[in-house]
Image (cartoon, rainbow, N blue to C red; front, side):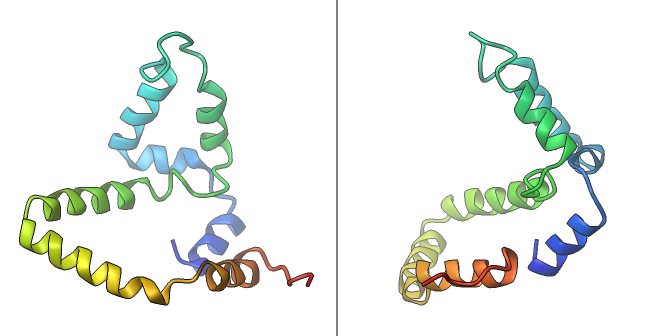
Length: 119
């Protein structure tokens, strides 16, 4: 989601349940988590996590699930084409110079968190 979409989502009070209702795949994944598939020694271990996501989903994890899933499928397909994978890897490496954690954190602070530097 873009910054304006996040703000719109939060202003509307959208809850994770809306994403669950719209995505059968997400419903299947959350049921697996809730039922203890990933924690057979303690099946209730992740109940609080699932409940929190469905109630608030402050970071829009559920809202982004389907787009994340689609991106992962695209990456899987690219991996199966060695030439395309190599090209993408080289371009990503070449473009990493643009990324700066300092710049990114400053942008998050200003645009998302609405805070100013203290130093």
